[in-house]
Length: 142
Image (cartoon, rainbow, N blue to C red; front, side, top):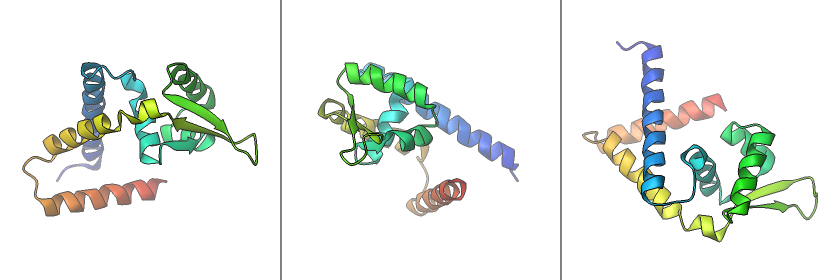
């Protein structure tokens, strides 16, 4: 039997390998997003291309000041924008611009290729079970 700490270590290794793959692919495809910021764009793409700043700090696990610095960088390059709420100016939403949205197929392709490689030799039924387990784990930890 595999010890629980080993399972978590394996999950961490899979995540690390995915991060490295994303960095390499962004570079290879000349996408103007730093690998260390790729997760920010993946979060936005997964949530209808926009998210309230406060929620985004939690989703990306970054401080307000760190997120603000990154958003500033990508605002200057035209990939992100901040939008104030009409009803409450204190509420800021970070949105991916049309320029950023053109990279969604690249992110999808990178993710799909990585997943296909990771689950090679695994049955469709096993993949469905794995997905359910991972989602259950996520919801248990939120």
